[in-house]
Image (cartoon, rainbow over all chains, first blue to last red; front, top):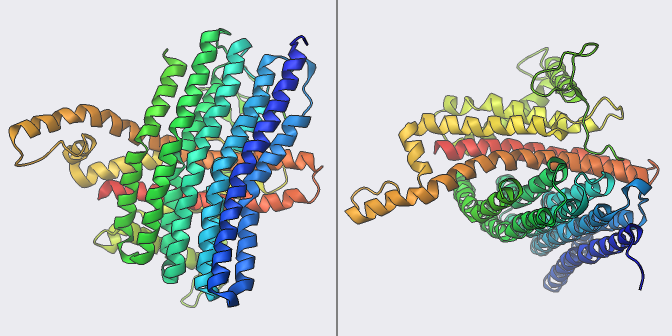
Length: 326
Length: 251
């Protein structure tokens, strides 16, 4: 039976963190790439002449959509190989390594799946309308870049967890690190998928009605931006935990409090993210079909998304109450 | 890399022991904001120095931008007259140009140039401005009564309904009012943290990857993706969200 010294804990945190980062981080991008390939196959069957365009669209879509998993790879390797200075060795640092893995792993899952929708819809669109492949592809890249912002937030939180010394001490430090990881990671899961479905709707619309590309682009950007609100709440709570809770008492209650706040805002954001993405998807289709009713469509979408995000706001309030009032 | 996310703040007036009020002065943020403003001012002044009916190159670019935003504002707000739409145009166009250049400030490879939008104080100020402006425009368009009854939820005013339904509707505002107020406040958080998170995320990823590859080759590609591509998209998103908040509030 080995003795669990602080050095051993740091090693455990390192292995768990790297495993979580690479394990979860790979799931999403793989599913997304598979979706793009499936759509390209279907397109080739329908329109064998457009095979060259289809292949190019598929490969570019997969390459851009793979970047969340590359973020996860980079951060995972950093977790594995990063030197830890002797004065930092202890439970909080071990928890920070594991928390960084949680944040980047789960955070990149959503964006990876999300990037698959626009790539698949673009392949379908190119098969239907090979001459428009340049316009479709540029819209696809913009949609994918937007769908990656939750994974960028997750990368930020995990890198800050890695490189900054954990402010709180003892069990509170452990709770802060793991809680921030869950808040950001799970919080980015839903918005990543949701902003992907929105981009998919926009691409389906634009490949059927190419003339309304400008208006559909605007609806898509706003819909994606609003559906990322839960991820932003996760980012906010993670920042509060990492920077504003330095003088937390190192008790087991504070450990539970911070973990609870992280779970509340993280899991609370999954549903609203996906739901607002669904609203954005149909809104993009609607403004592509009827560009003149764009302002009406945008208003309906925003009000619907605001209501579907009320649960994320409850989750944020519960998390803030847990942190500050209880 | 231990200094990731830290900003240079002067807590005292330089050379003295006098503390600066409100917790200090974010020197680089303010300096870079001024640089962005001067840059835009000089660039636009040079472009439209010799105005003529047949535009030269600079004037044409400025006219393209101005025309595009004029159309964007008009099609989002859909007010009756051109002048009513034009009232919001300077704000929206300036906001976009400022944010665009501000997000590109991470590109010059000198330590004193960094994105003012990578400081939460800058984006929070802009976000507060956007939501406050939308609220003021909403109150002006609907009157204070109309605006509050909107905050009270969809069941607040139901003319012609039976007495019981009226009372139930008024009671439902106890549930809807806090929700709507918090929803409005959370708009400030979401609009400002979105810009801040994307910009600071890009800069942190660039710093870390540059360190990993010993500053060779790859950072330039990352610069183009995170600074120019993501920066331009986020500047546009912030501007469009401001415009949409105003449009939703006045309808």
